[in-house]
Image 1 (cartoon, rainbow, N blue to C red):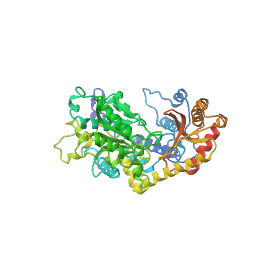
Image 2: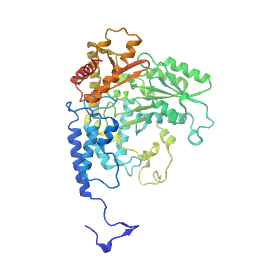
Image 3: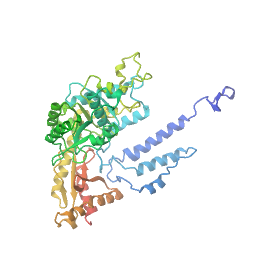
Image 4: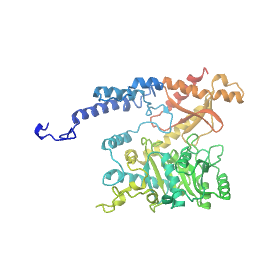
Length: 502
């Protein structure tokens, strides 16, 4: 109802009577946009006849998208056209032939969970504003802790494995020197930590961000398969102590980004125990192997870690972002390290159990209910269904490896132990050439050229990179259960088709 003029209330020239938005029009827009998402994204997600991407260079795409923000709003039919354009020109990461990153595919249950949380718009810091999602997070963390092999522990979901690694670094430093929280870095010895030469680049970023300094990151050499060498770790720890530095942390990796290597955790834990060092395991990529009784041996010894980063949005497809930081400690170390005791949020005289107000152990204030996505998928599939995801991805990897071995012009970097299959494509023009400097220089140009062709064609997306002295090679990552054996055959056929004239 429109209020009568005589009852209208003005403040600073603004009418305060009644809502200013048209709810009916808004509801209709949401309904039509959801129908568009269903038709153009969800229903086409597994259609191999659709393109993986509709490539356009940046300047052309700017013109196609009408990015300008204007003084007046635009009608709903125009907004729906813009939504259509956004979908059309975005990369279809749900496509069965998207292999570019360490995430892929569409999990329908996680997607529904995301729709729900976007509609509810919660922030997970206190029980009073987010009762359901705090209890969900508690349940998921408890189960993940169980799979690591700890009897108890603590944890929190946060935005990304990079942030989890930063949490670990800061927490280990706080455990080593609790006064740092109040007194800062002044007066501290030269703190130093150790990580694999194959570690994620977030280790250097965290060292810079936290004031440790990138020069105080000791990169431990790896073997031919990309695994940290424990003997080299111990040598570097002794050397650091001899130089007067203060070692406080070792960051091992379970599932390196490029090669998918798993560090020998038991041997690394032995070194940490001898020297009193915090052991953090970056299992952002490889942690999901814990769900598989067949493949969990890859992380043998992870129960000895002090903290673990594990991203269910990767292999388990919980939707970006869904990242857990888990801690063996149960003495409230997370809260002691990060709490600021904001009196407007974390009052201690509330009418309920304030131990459920977990937000003070996060570096964030507003925080998304990311655990809910994983919880919904886990509820739908069960532990056995999650295990099957992992087992199938690694079985497909084995199939691809055997196909690569059979085909002329394809060469494996090494036998993979996880879902990272790294290989070169050698075009006919190079197959008779001796493997000398000229050969490797020419081969270095092949993967980028094929990548350009596949992107412009839209037939698939596959990553490539140089790595530790090796020229550009492809890295195929298997994740999505929508991927079939036929897609592996198509991958190799398409690379050969795109590169045979080079």
